[in-house]
Length: 426
Image (cartoon, rainbow, N blue to C red; front, side):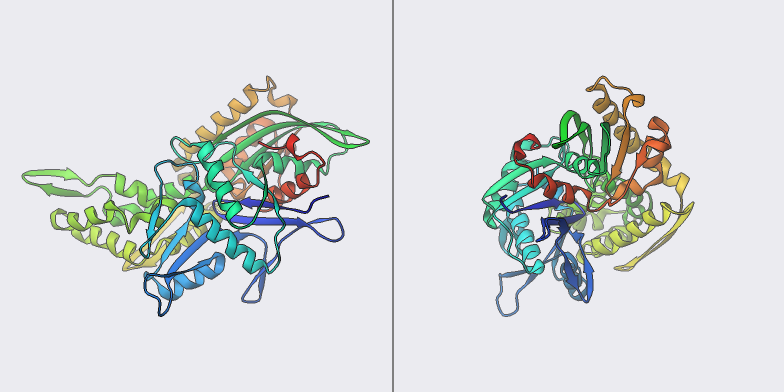
C-alpha cells in the first residue's frame, strides 16, 4: 500500500493524518510552547525580514499569532483564506512588494505546516474539499486547479480530492455493525456540506453507495459576521452619515460587510476601501467613529476581534447569555448577548442551511424516517440552534457527534488505505 496523507485544509483549522507503523490512523502532532495539538489554525502572518527590506518572513498557526501579538499592526495577518479558493475576483494580494496568489498563500502555509510537523510527507495526498465552495459565484474548477498547483509546489505528486462530508461519513461508518443510510452534516468555517450515504456491512468490509451531496457557502464565519455586524460595526460608523456638497448621505454598508468577514478583513488595509475611508473622515458627520475604524485596520486587530467573537459564540453554546468584550486600538466594547438574540440574528443562515438539507434529501427521494443515523461534525455543530434544526427533523435519538475537529482528516486517511480510492473521490 502506498503511503499517503489525509489533509483537511479548513477555513479555521487544518488537520493532517497518516497511518502509523501499527497500521492505525493518527493525527500529525504539533507542539507550541510545550503544548501539543492536532488542529492547526489556518492563519498566516507576513512580516518584514530583518536586514532584508522587501523580503517577507512567513509564520503560520500559533506561531503566526505570536508574531502578530509581538508586532501588532506592523505585519500582515491573514485568516479564512480558504474562502478565496474558488473566487475568480481574487487574483492576488500585495505583501511587501510581492504579489501573492491564492496558491502561493496555500503553498507557504503547507510548507510551514510540514516544517512544524518535523516529518517528511509522502508523495500521495487525499485532500478534503467542500461540496460547494464559499463565495457568491464559486468556480470549482478554479479552486481545484489552485489546490493542485499549491500541492504540487510543496512536493505532492498523486492528488485525490474527496468531499469533506464523505470523508466524515467513512470515519463514522467504522462503528457500524449493520447496514445503514447515513446523513452527514459538516459545518466548517466557510461552508456547510451534506452527504447522504448508504453503507452495507459485508465480509469484505464496507460497501459504499453515495446517494446525494449538497453544500452551501454558509457556516461558522457567517454566524461570526452577524455578531460583528450587530455589535461591533456601529462603533466604526455603521449607520452614520457624511456630507457630499449639499446632501447628507448614509455611509455605505459595503465597508462594514467586508469588515465583518474574516477573509475580506485580512485584505482591507491594502484596498481601495481603506483609501476611501481616509477621505471619508473629512466629510463624515461622526468622524471619530471612522477614525476608530481606520485605527482598528492600522492595528491589524482582526485577530483580537476574532477571539472576542469566538469566546462569545462558545459561551452561547453553553449558556443563555454571553458577554462580548473587545478593547483594542482605542475601541472599548462591552455588550451582553442573549442566546435568543443571537439565534434571531442567524435565522437567515439557519434557513439557508435548512434549504440545503432539503435539497440533499430531495435528491435521494428519501424522507427523514428513512435516514438511520445523522452525524454532525465541524465546529458549528456545537451551536445549539444548529443541533435543534436536526433534532426537529430527525429526532434526538438519531443524532450523533464526536471528534468534530478531526473526523474528516481521519476519514481521508482511511480512504487513502482503500485499494480503489477513485470510488470515493469527488
